[in-house]
Length: 215
Image (cartoon, rainbow, N blue to C red):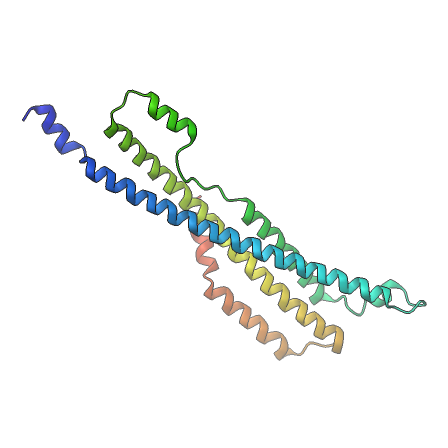
């Protein structure tokens, strides 16, 4: 066996190994694409839910204003519904809507070669083996890029859901405040505690930590 042949056999992987690496990389890309699509779909659904809720709130305000006595001012009607809880709920709902929109539009997924790359592969003088090895190297870069994208979008998707839950909690407390004039300590502590437990079990803090580590 010649020295060149010996070097090729020891320093470079066999074609079968490179092909296996390419197939595994393609499966990884497909899995990453599915994960990001799931995040985008959830963000889109939550965005629609938020917009519907905002529409319901605005409709309720409009009905209340139209149904007020002629001698009553708009401010006197709204003062019965506007309190710290309802204001916080609306702000959180708007925040959830904004984060959902960012999550849905921030995706930057790499799924394969561009047309320019394909033309360059056909026009170059590389061997099939060299082209395959170059493709595997490209897959490794795409996988790293997609991993960073997923790590960045995951906490955004979770934050969208958490803000929506917080908003609904605040609006519910605001409704109680408007109806009874008082929110009892137990009625306040229980939903806040449940929200904290939910936040913990979503591992939102871990998602944020991972996203920051990859910056």
